[in-house]
Picture 1 (tube, rainbow, N blue to C red):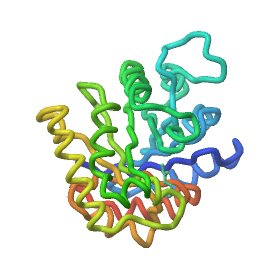
Picture 2 (cartoon, rainbow, N blue to C red):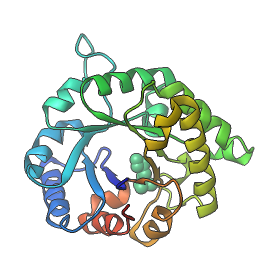
Picture 3 (cartoon, rainbow, N blue to C red):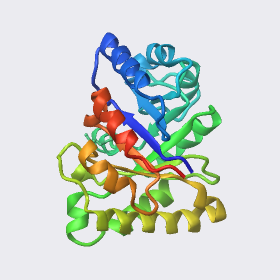
Length: 245
Ligand code: 13P
């Protein structure tokens, strides 16, 4: 399966900056074996999708509501993202779980809505430093998977240890290998044989310098990149480190 290199632009860029960044990524995408995705803020999805039309770079949202439409001021429905040109959506990112108190049940409902709208969900899981310090990282992540994933699940999982996000700290190769193995076992348990086909991305301070070793680990199906995705050259360097096959 091709690795997926996804950029989560979070709450960064004005419109013209987002379009320029997307154009920069597309300009360097030729010859890259990995699947490429950029996720701007929802306000910029349509402009970025227009800029990327005809290129191999896909566009995704960073969240969606569980309802198709309705009286939910300030929220964005999955069919709206799809209509604006998105084909993916990140769900249950730790920043949303933290800032907006999103629960596993809400993430699952959003995931169902995304799938119904024709979007590929990227469901994020990951433990805090406090969980890891008492050896609970695998049970926490297994619980998040069980609570957040609907069955069937035609999507992607992203493992993002909370303590590695935006901190410059990366999980060790041994930590990533152990957790991705654990996630694969849980996917097989929850989804049956279909669990073998779900890509598991690693996220948390992925940089050009560490991408090669992280992306070569077993059960790593790509990367979810925050800070380094805001520079086209860095994002493309990470994508070039992806392994094909
Ligand atoms: P950083 O790459 O900035 O650590 O962010 C990771 C992340 O949260 C991607 O969703």
